[in-house]
Image (spheres, rainbow, N blue to C red):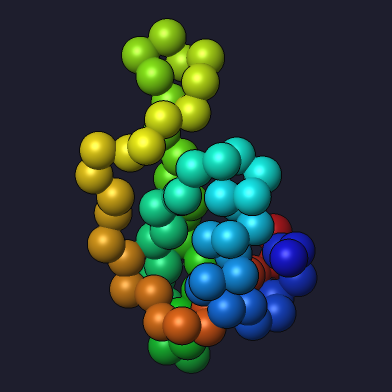
Length: 73
């Protein structure tokens, strides 16, 4: 999964992040100028010291579909 303008399943993005961190991320999407859903933000939560990942108490609700574009920077 790379920021190459390609489309990826939302589930594969979540799974890759969860495998790497051990915690499920929050993912927020928006739409590009063609009204196609694209990855906008990924949220992971940390403890108050900022030293460990934790389960997020609240996850954002983005406008993600099952497939999203990961735009190039």
